[in-house]
Image (tube, rainbow, N blue to C red):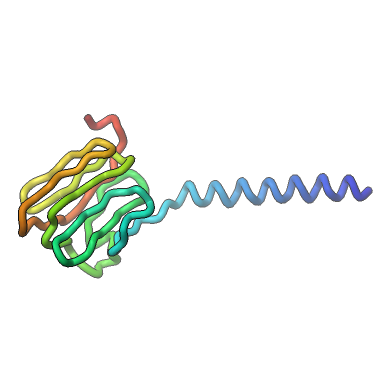
Length: 123
């Protein structure tokens, strides 16, 4: 009988773990903040305002939507990088498409308004 209880408990625990994993995959977080980008997402490096990092699901995201309306853009951008994502950054100078591990350097005064985390099929 104890073995039967252990078997049922193990099955219940595994089902609960799978359900929680499914929720985590179905609802990835979007974030942008002044961080060093531990998520290996997309990084916007500025000259003085701090660095901003975005990570989450594939798709187009405005800076406003990523900050909850807290700010509409990132000013004084000097570099944009992507670690393992394909990316498009939308700037005051146009747009920049980057492959994983890529970066783009800018002079002073560039503003980033939006970005897109993409899949490898857009190249």
